[in-house]
Image (cartoon, rainbow, N blue to C red; front, top):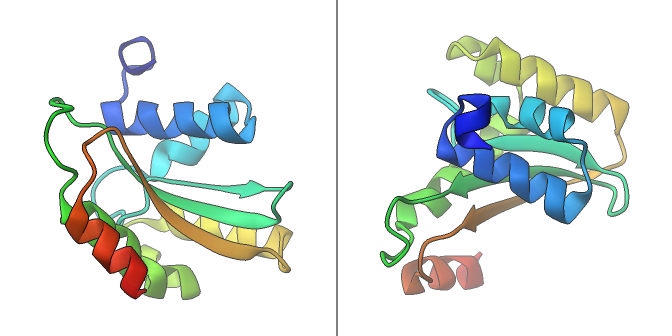
Length: 136
């Protein structure tokens, strides 16, 4: 998908994950994964999942070397997105009005949905991430 769509591996992985595990249409998944890039504050893909009634926010990690542990920074990035999710206008202030608009539209369309934040990775398990998840 990455080479066909001329997109990053992380964006392709995030879109594939949404398509495969949430039954999102390919075009919608690629659009939802458009957040990946500079100043994304750990938010690589965002979409509404009607079956769980959640707005899903994911940090995607598709490393070149699958034998390495997933860097804890990937989890930290996902967690650090929380203040931006609470007030999407912060994204506009840091040069990502596209993310601000997308989040605002999703929250307006689904006001009763909770927000689920996660990390998807093809890297090896990280004990540091596991410990942080347990602590939170």
